[in-house]
Amino acid sequence: MSHPTLFPSPVRLLGLRDTPLSLDEVYGAVGDDAAGGTALFVGTVRDHDGGKPVSSLEYSAHPSAEAELRRVAEEIAAEFPVRALAAVHRTGLLAIGDVAVITAVSCPHRAEAFAACRRLIDTLKHEVPVWKRQIFTDGATEWVGAC
Image (cartoon, rainbow, N blue to C red):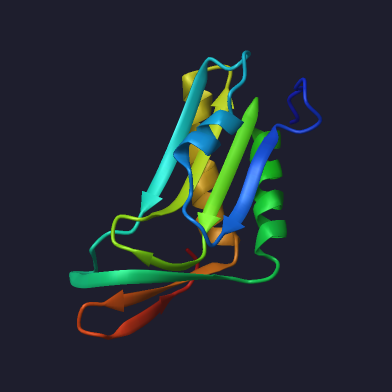
């Protein structure tokens, strides 16, 4: 079911970037006077995985990743009463603590915003072809399917 908006599309900001992501930019992109709730998710690089210490991550994206990100964003916007939506993901080498992904959704009410933002990040992780290579402190590396 589609939900009408004042804009042609509530998808306001999407991208894959090899530069640091800005929480302020993403939050600003989803501002909407008709939204009573805005939910954001910020994914950061942690210092461990599966009990092994991690020193960094490297993200790579398939050439179709931006188109797939748009498809996912539009599906979420059609499924929920989204007023505004944004999603950006890093590529390249990231250090511990770096921001890897930010998703944000504004809706008329908080429950809808939380649900839509959760669905956005979960679907992005499973369907957008971005992969990560974990680099462990012992020098070993491991590719992880979808980001």
